[in-house]
Length: 110
Image (cartoon, rainbow, N blue to C red; front, side, top):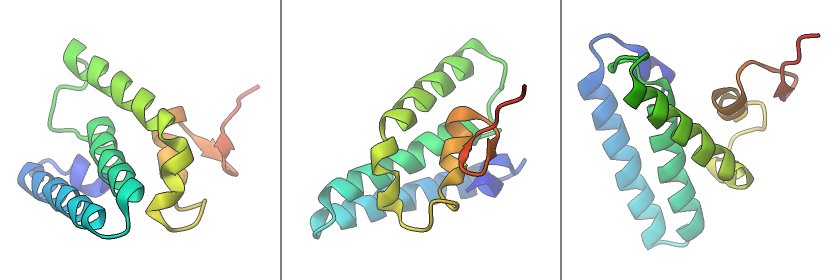
């Protein structure tokens, strides 16, 4: 996902991937994955908002959108496990919300 978000010519690929995650979330919701489906779709959308490089990073709109996405992602923290994978693999979510992560915790520079 990070690669799609940072590719200079990847806007179409990024949008296609995001569309596929939203479609997959709908398919999960149609089965037994109701709450998981909503979290999955929202987390994918929010990570894209935080990492995409195809918009001006210093514009007030982007800064506001990223701040909102960070807040929403933080509110979904209890549902991060619904993505599967290990806690270490989900560390990218913590990094997106809090910044650099060391041993599963936000980095503290003394």
